[in-house]
Image (tube, helix red, strand yellow):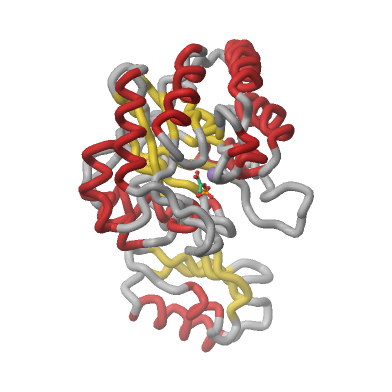
Length: 336
Ligand code: PEP
Ligand code: MN
């Protein structure tokens, strides 16, 4: 951490800052410049930088070591590649996860999965426990939904992901799913993250509605600190002042995260835009920007969907999009 003193800072101010950081367990390295004195605080302790900012004579406090460690490229230089059976996610391998917002019935899942598997999708999505904004909206089929998801996936030789909402649900999820999804609304449910650190199955961690990239990485750090190294990050749009789309897709999060973290980062263009006709262009943008995968909502009959029909693709449109994305992937020397 670097502490930049303002040009009027007295010797007494400087000494006070030095004493303060030493008392907090840091070494202090003072460098006197023509205009400013800069104090380097070196150590492994955690300190709230506001405590230093409040001291007399301090102009600015700049953190130079990141608060996340295990998820960072400093800790692990090469890309993390997650392998589940014959599916790889990360590195040059782009994942395609598709399926309805929510599991509604066996027939709906079967009809959707059949179409998806015909065009080569290996990862099926479907919520069984839904974090709905309204308590009166369809909340999901619960364990019955997970059973249907598993049964249908087995029929088409697919893998599944579904959202886990609470710590107590984890053992149930381990029975049915291959990837446990943490939804945007639970990104900072630290108890859930800690418990997911203890399991040995991949976790798909979605960015919170108003979360910064650093907060997303810190949430991943919670899971990794528990020993679970298999985390897939997901950019799903953030809340901004713009209302033309449900959220604003932060495409720049992809290269930003890929530079500082070794974890794969996928994109959810469905929740990011909330509009079916925006899903294809945003999917292409994500792949062009280097995303390690996509999670797209597809429904056999979007107009009758119980949840998120307006942003769900028809299987036919999805098939065309997937074909185009495969071509695009070749250009950037990656593959689905
Ligand atoms: C979902 O993927 O089903 C979902 C609810 O997404 P998010 O958590 O990103 O809103
Ligand atoms: Mn949805």
